[in-house]
Image 1: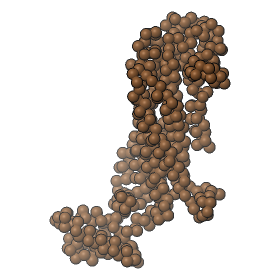
Image 2 (image 1 turned 180 degrees about the vertical axis):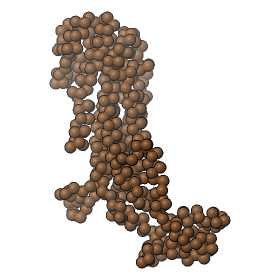
Image 3 (image 1 turned 60 degrees about the vertical axis):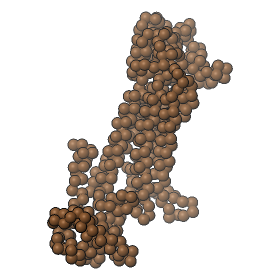
Image 4 (image 1 turned 90 degrees about the vertical axis):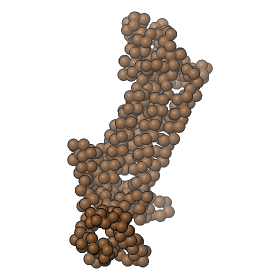
Length: 447
């Protein structure tokens, strides 16, 4: 239900009604600015602000003739007014209205995206504390490395999403600028105070300098921030897809009663949500290139950016909003299997402890090169033993790697049995988790 509400709310910010409503808001703010400057009477200002309205169907009808959407809009608005309509759009060019209105739409949409991201962070934080000490194997190149906790995996996600949040917040500020500087940006037909007063009423800042349009590096900043967020969200989705692989099965998407995974194979439970998130994030990143290409317009302005923005701005915000709702629900409902995590951790017969053994030997006067040779030759035996079908852990609970080390006379000359066994302690690898959590979540790291 939350997901559906969020999608509709964002979509409404970019529909035709919302576009013209934003245009009208700018035009009314401009009228009020002229009034404050003493150019429009209080009576005419009040009439315009009270009575000005538009009709979408009428605008469409007029545009068939004018072939100009702003003129069609202004004609529709003028039909709702009397003689005072002559002061609507006074001293302005089309982009004064359009670009300032788009700034309102972007600002409002970014606020919703930012709230979405905060919701995602809350879900990740909750699961991170839940699994702060849930042991699992860390992987590099897809290969088992050393023990970590699932809480640390989630903490990394949280920290990365937090950086994306800062980018989005900065992008919102970069985009929250209006311009009413006229056709060439030279304020030939209106004073700077007109722009300043109009933007102030709209909760925007005036662009320090502009030509006929707001410079499109601002829009590129917004789309790029969304793309960075999308890259991080895809990273999370790809991890979930890996965790759900049958051979791994450390976590999986929630599979609701009655849900079906395949039309042909009734047993299937596929990571469809995270796969969908992956695809959506690819689309979001694809908008970066056209947004960047829109920065280079001819001279004071051309219209090559317009058709692009009619696609990428609504699509980017609506898609990002939908994706964030989906990934938040995915994290909140993710089913985690600590037993399987531990099973996989033991899969390589204790090899995950190789570095700790390695680091003990230099403390006994062994060179790093010789220490590496001792540990590696015993590790390579484990790989061979596993290929031959030997059990990773024997009936006494001893791993293959531990057995090999205890039988190595050169190693035993430097390390005793108790010292070697001490290297096979999972808790050792989780001893700094609390400190890391304080770094990531701050002093309020504990829920």
